[in-house]
Image 1 (cartoon, rainbow, N blue to C red):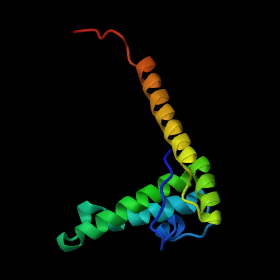
Image 2 (image 1 turned 30 degrees about the vertical axis):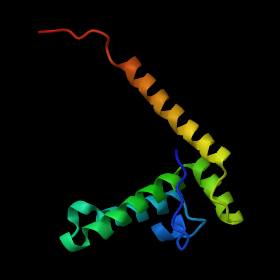
Image 3 (image 1 turned 180 degrees about the vertical axis):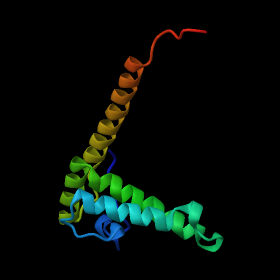
Image 4 (image 1 turned 135 degrees about the horizontal axis):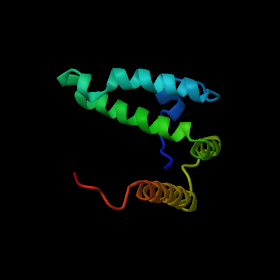
Length: 118
């Protein structure tokens, strides 16, 4: 899972409107509320651009904070004021890439190699 960072004026916790010690269920509830409110498909045309931006930021905040490893890294960097070192960013990229590879391997194993015809 990739770690994302909110704009300097807003933490990912603030994006979701939860406390820094918030639980995963609180994050999920906040994310769902924001997704319903800011989804581009339900936005007024004049607000679509802003709502799309907020929707994407909420999605990225939820993805980062709901994963224990990426949340831990985000919290450590938030506490020290760092945005992550090149090494850490590369580490998370490799983890995400490996997770995607693993998922593709699982799918490959569950798909029959031959399909019967009627």
